[in-house]
Length: 392
Image 1 (cartoon, rainbow, N blue to C red):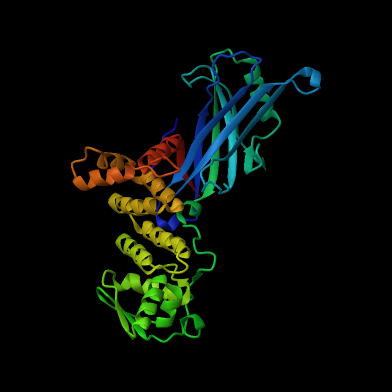
Image 2 (cartoon, helix red, strand yellow):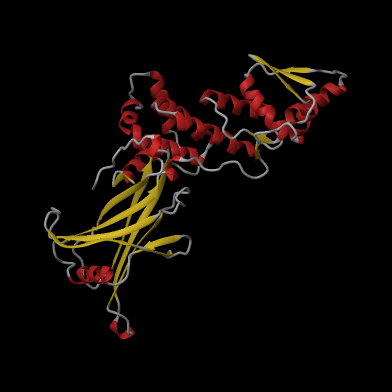
């Protein structure tokens, strides 16, 4: 198999594409010629902040002549795997195959060059598949398979997928539903026309806000103001000194306007604090904020170069079950930090903090029964079969 290339590309060649090439060695073995062949091959196009599963299928069978059909049938195609994020369409998929004299893969008996595939519904109709071209390509392969199953020949199918590099580097759109992105100009926007008649005292300052807006959008403040009203307390401020002005300002902005700043930057620690503040305040539309929190972490992930910073994001993503962010973290570790990751985070690591982090990464989640460490190793194994190249 061809090894994975850990390519580092600069930001000025985003217009370039990515070419993934994988060689599939068919394990046909020595079998009865009357039996068919049904083989599958899984691999992963993993590059920096995205990872996509793909599966190659080949079916060969003998057809009964009395049905007035050809005596041999062959189907060869590639389709996206079962990973939730594997819904992206490549710009082009090509297939080729080679027959070698023996398992040394040196003496070539026959070579069919790469040819363009065509799209068709998959066997189960759930997604599109990329099928091998008809004509000589399939006829010749079927001929070799049907007549030479008992020989020492080895069949290698080459799969080539071409993508735009931006597909693997850009984050998904995670703001949807009733949650809106804050516009650039808010002067005449009614959503931001409120009277700041209340103050939240934070650990490093104060955040002015609308008491009515807090009452309508937060379960915590609604209960607080009802209790104060029953006790004839007219408060103008409230202490939230466990949180900073950065996190409280972002939260208040959402509570009052139902908008968020999509390009907002926060550190991992600030995002974690923001999540704690959300749990404390209990917004009436709390579920909408999950996508915003994930986007904050994705914005942070784009700037991360060190392994320890990346692992911090992964721990938050795993705890909160941010599916897309987890896959982005996994792909970044696999392609840029895998060897260092395996050396540093172990059960017998010298550093106590690294051992504790390894324990958290080893913990499995309900329903998935797979820990982040296991998933990273699985992803690496699938990506190990693929060679990556940057194209113009």
